Length: 427
Image (tube, rainbow, N blue to C red):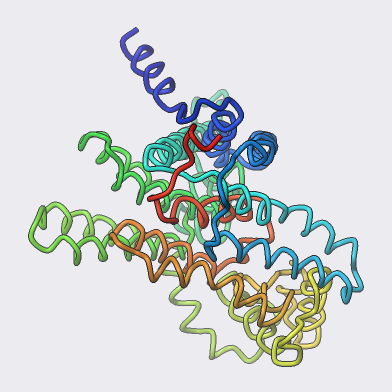
C-alpha cells in the first residue's frame, strides 16, 4: 500500500501547472506524457505529441509576447522549408512527401517554442517522465526476454536465450541472435534510438534532484540496459560520459566516480559485439571485395558512397525523394550487395541531410549545435551535446519518427537558455 501511495504521489508530482492558461498547461503535459511513452515507439506517443502540437499552436494566438529570434528556433523550420523545396527536383515525390510528413515536428515545435518557453521546473519534470518511460521499457524487455528464453516440456523447464539452436551465449550474441541482446531485446524500436534515449536518461539522472540511492539504482539499471542493447556507439558514448565526469569532478567523490568509470569500462569491453566489431574493423582492409559485410563495415561503405555522391552534387543535393535511391544505385555500381539488399541510408545524419538538400541544408542543421556549444555552461549540457552529435554521426536519426520528434523538442527546449519563460501576465 505504501509503495502504491509513493507511486501515486510520484505520478501526481510529475504533472505540470505553470500557467493560468489551460491550453498551455495541456501543451506541456501532453509533451510530458509523450516523453513517458516515447521509448514505447510510435504508436502510443505520436497521438500525444500531435495533441501537444495542437494546443501549442492554438496557444500562440493568446500570447501577447514577441517571439524569439533565437537561431536555435529558426534553423529547423528553415531546414524543413528547404526539404520541401527539394521536392521540386525529386523524381520520387511520393517518397519525399512521406519524409516531409514525418518531419512536420521540425517546423511546428520550434515555432511553438518561440512563444512558449520552458523553465527549470518544466525541464526537470519532463526529464523525470522520460527516465520513468525508459525504465519501464527496460523492465518490459527484460521480462519478455526471460519469457522467450523459457521452454516448458515433459522434461521440465529449460532456459536458453539463443535464437538458433546449438549456439553458446557468445555465438548467439554475435551471429545467431539472443533474446537478451541487440534488436531482439529492444522490442519497440531500433537499438540505436533506444541507446540514445537511455544515454540522455543517464545524463538527466545525474542532473536531477533525485536522492543519491535512487540515482545510483537508475544509473546502474540504465547502464545495464545499454549493455543489453549492444549498440556499439551507445556503449562507447557511455564510457565517454563516465570519463568526462571523472575529469570534471577532480576533487570530489573521485573514488566513487573512478569506480563508476571502471564499471562502465568493464560493461563496454566484455560485450561480445564490441570485441567482434573491433576485430572485423581490423580485418576490413584485408577483404578483397565488400559484397557481403557486417553492420559496422556496411556503415563505412555507406559513408563512402554518400561522400562520392555529395561530391557530384554538393549544393542542391538530390532531393528528399531521391537521396536514398541514389545511394542504392551507388551500392549496386560498387557491388556492395549487403548495403543494396538492405537499402541502407547514409547512416550519418550530416551526410544524409547533405544528400537531401546540399551544403546549405547541412549548415542550417549544424547551426543549433554550434550555438548550443557556444552557450554550454555546465558538464551536463556538454555531455548531452556530445551524445546528440555523435549519435548523428553513426545514424540517420531524422529519417524516422523516433529521432525526428526527439530532436525537434530536445534541441530547442532542453538545451536552450532557461532565462525566459512565458507567464500569465503575457496572456
